Each structure stands twice: as C-alpha cells, then as structure tokens.
Length: 500
Image (cartoon, rainbow, N blue to C red; front, side, top):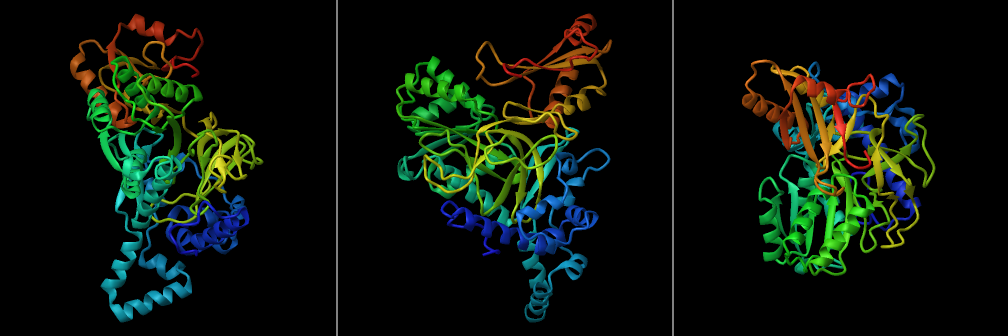
C-alpha cells in the first residue's frame, strides 16, 4: 500500500481507513525519500532533533517547524534556493541515508543488471521531467518540479476534479465538449485541466484564453462546437459569457462552468448562471476549483449543488488548518490558515507548508450531503491571510502576484522617477476581468515609448501579468496620487476592486 501512487478507493474509505492509510504513507515517505534526499528537510529534521522514524503519523508533524513561501522562493542572492526542495538522490546520500533493505536491493540490482541499469532506474523514479512556476517574493518565479509519478498524480487529481464536476455522471463523456480557456502558461491550472480532460476521455479545445485565440473566436468555438462545458479563470469566463450575452449569441448547450485560479464569490456564480439562462441554457452547474502550484494538484466542489466545499484527497496529502497568529491547529469547522503536507512524491516536495490561504468555515469530515463521498471537505470561502511571512500577495487576473515585484521592477528602473500601480475592475461590474494600470512620472529626457515597452516586458516577466495601460503623468500629479490617502504612507499599489 505505502508504495502505490494513489488509491482507487480514495473517496469511499472510512475516516479510520483514511487515517491508517495516510499515516502509513507519510511515515514511509519521510523515512525512505524525504529525509534521505531533500537537503532542506534533512536540515530541518536535524535542527529540530527529530529522527525520520519519529514521524509515524500526521500528529507527529507538529514537532517540525512550518515551511513558508519565503523558504522556497528564489532571490537575487539565492537564485537556486528552490533546488533544496527537490528530491535528488546521489551516491553519497544513498550510501548514508537509504534504508538498509532498499540499499541491499539496489546493490543486488547493480550486480545482476549493471551500473547503467541501476542509474537509469534511479533517474526514472526521481528525475524531473516537467516544471511549472509560481510567484516568488522578489518577483522571480519559483520553479516547481515534477517527476514521472508526480505527473501521474497531477493527471489523476485532475481527472477527479472532472469527475466531481459531473462529467461521466450528470454529463456523459461521449456527449461532452469542453472549451478550456485557461491561458497557455507553465502553470498548474493549464496543465492540470489539459491532462485531466485527456485522461477523462472527453472532447476538448485548449484555446489558450483571450490572449491566444481571442474572446470572439472562443465564443464562436462554443457555438460552433456545441460546447457543453467551459473551464477557465473566473473573471475571464465571466467576461466571455457577458460578451456573448451582449452579442445575442446562442450558448444554450452549456451545462457546466468550472472555474478556478482565484476566489469565486457566490454572486459571480449566480451572475454566470443568469447570463447563460438569457442565452438559452438551462440546469447549468457553476462550480469552482482550488489549486496551488506547490501542491501540484487541485480540488473541486461537486455536482449538483456546488456549495459543499472542495473535496480533498486523503490518499495523497494532508490538509490541516491553523490559527494564522499562533500556528496552533483549529477544530473541525473552525476558520484557519491552510497548511499543506504531501504524503508522497518526487520532484519538489513540501511538508507543513503554510499557503497563506485563510479558510472561512474550516474542514468538514462528514460525508458529503450532495455526492455522498466520505473524503474531508474544505470550505470554498477562501481569502488571503495578512500574516503570510515575508510576502504581500494578491490575485490579479487569476495570477497570484507578490506586490513586492512592482517595487523590484519600478523602484530601480532607469527613466522612472516615481510610479504608482492601480488595480481595478472596468466599469461597475465587480465580476469582470481585473485591469492593471501603471502610472509613471518619467525622468527628464526619457524616451517614453521605449520606457513603456521595457516596463511592460519586465512587469510581465516579474508578475506574469501584462499591464492593461502604462500612462505617463506629471510629477505634481504623481505626488497627488501618492498622497491621496492623506497619511504618511505613500500609496504605491492601489487596489480599487470592490471588497479590497
């Protein structure tokens, strides 16, 4: 059991079976892979004076300190800090830390099959074959690596998301056509959706989103292909539906909207359903999914109600909630910050990782009243914590952005004397796609066109979000903007989105 990649009985186990499975898998992982081959966690264990054999259940994890985004994020001084989290067995760590029985099997393989075969087998198990990126605290992207089995896990959890959304049950696979509007990028959202749809065996168009295929052509594809489902970032999917409704388009075949990448308020779900109803659709399910790159997987609500929370995977990871200030665990159903631990993996592996996501409503361990699955369920009312160590994060256009990246790019940019960034929604519609505007007071004699091109490219690279506009203003206007709050603190990043 401890060596299987995932359980085919993942959603039917009793709580006692889940605990037994989870604890055995974690203990085996820590003892045979995490401690031997993770430079970061070997140091953490040694400094905490915890032996890998001491971790026999998830309850023992409290003996270890939390891992923060700042621990993994690369910086100018440590550009390869992320490598410490990749499981990288070498001869020294194998000889020193590999469990004796496992080491004897490897030596026997080497004798019978040769050195080349042994090295290839090791690489086949641990060698990274895929990389995705998340935001670092300095604006540098943080690589997250996958080995072969990690890709299998991501694909399987994506399939579970598809299954939870009703495809294969409420919607027959052979009758389902999905338009995937997730943007083409080395990000979890795109890759998990793409591999999941292939694994589920449904017809799909991976459009690349508005910047690739374009909104009008996506709407035409939904109509022309008689699409029954649309997947994407909430703000952009809402924009597609609103544009289609304003144009009087026929989206009557749509039965499912599945969105993820940013918080989805209940009001947005209702608006999407209303827009589709105006375009002839009926009995539409609007569901949301949660994912974060460091987990290398995502979780979803289930059909048909879509208000029963994100269904978790007791065979693959352990999710706990803690008080953001004290770090102490909270009880069932209580609010808390999401802390993630993988039960097995290769590539980039994290335990006790504080995500900075604050869950209102906590975790429920009762069987789902909608689908009957026995897995733990996480409340879908999630926002960002203000107490995330060393980071100031916000979602813009579905991308998690560290606001420090704006300072890193603009503070030292030649030609920029002063600046301000503004995040807002177009018009009065709170569910529309975010707009990012940059205001610049340029140095005297600066070439504004070249400056605009350079700033746009550098901000896109640092935050993975393209500014909608870059506007040059006078020094007096910039001063008024920065002091608009009448306080001592300059208003460098202004978030004008409702509720922010």
